[in-house]
Image (spheres, rainbow, N blue to C red):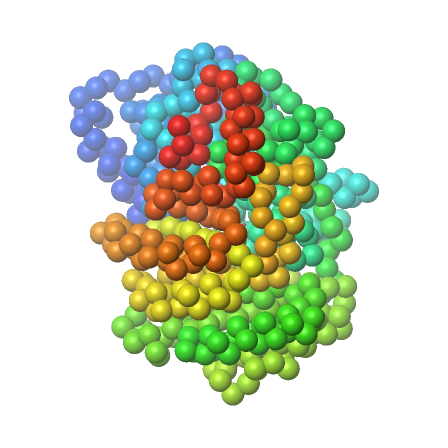
Length: 499
Ligand SMILES: Cc1cc2nc3c(=O)[nH]c(=O)nc-3n(C[C@H](O)[C@H](O)[C@H](O)COP(=O)(O)OP(=O)(O)OC[C@H]3O[C@@H](n4cnc5c(N)ncnc54)[C@H](O)[C@@H]3O)c2cc1C
């Protein structure tokens, strides 16, 4: 609890710092003193808020579009906050007429900050927050500003659930559009994107189209996996819901990094014995939370293994976790273990706000990944480089037993067992280059094991072709063809780095 509070306090301090800095930047900007400020923009038919570059408050608003602290130095001409689908239509029509390229922001969590582009018009969807649950059909219709925790709460009130992102504030539209590795992924098809059963889309010509497996199936195919490069605005998502699990249990094991082999062998033995079931084993290579920054890697770097079981009863969940308790994970090499810990979803989220888990820390942030069938080998290939990470917050996270599938009606491209992500997290701008260098150093080590990459968590600055590598050649080609069909004049921005 103490950790949670101090982490939140840290995030608050960062936010206060950002606000003050944003205001100062604005006052210091030469054009703020020299040029007259533009008058507020009036977009025909648009009822939400608008702000233009140079107007008071622009810089604070611009920076708030991105959750983490590495605010890209890219400046849209106009930012608008939509309050309805009609607002989105009006904004798209206005932008098309004025030749302003359109970018979109929902929950603002994407590490690349793709909503911030130079020039053009940014549509912020975060105020669109309605959720409607049809308990009988087990469908949630959500607007694109809805975040992870809000859907959990709304669905739970009807005894239902969705494979939501692991952090409460992540936007559900960016998450699901890109693939979505959510809680209980193993039992929900690997990617939450496959649980999109319908979408309402505003296209480049201002039309509103419905996309389902039967209506506009090509658009339906595209929204299921496209990620931060869609050629339209999704204004409603229909998501398939599932019966809420009656029991969530987790067993955690902490081993020194030098015992990574013990952890991965245990996992592979359980797999070989056919005992993985639907458990979700996650291995994080990280800095020991109680060790100082200066502690040598032999003392401070650990493998933090946590296995989750989502089940119909506590008995079944305990049974699912039993193979891990019987393995070398629970043996003499293990520094600490906590087995069969009960959770609810809020409890799962709290793991993110705990200082023990660096992933939810709001700081400067960059990530890249592989999707692979050789996850444990990938971890071994990364271990030495991880031990030289520039900050205590940098970590490597591997999720196993994902069971992702490839479907003809989804552009999500990979059938894999594991996701391995490398996260650089740091505080000061002066340390950007050393952290990017560390992140980049992971690529030649992990890429040989890649089947592909996860489009929501690649860094385009490290490799401008990275987005292309998130899809099979055929799917990338089809996405390009659909872009030219639905957005022939290029109203929408493409993926960062792709013209
Ligand atoms: C703390 C944290 C935890 C995370 N946890 C997970 C996790 O558990 N599992 C996982 O898979 N990922 C996770 N992610 C990654 C996350 O899925 C991506 O960053 C995702 O892009 C975030 O979506 P967003 O709406 O919040 O972001 P935004 O930055 O608002 O959106 C990213 C881009 O997606 C596109 N987009 C979003 N909404 C729409 C829309 N309605 N219409 C058209 N285009 C749209 C736009 O191009 C937009 O610029 C996490 C990220 C963070 C920072």
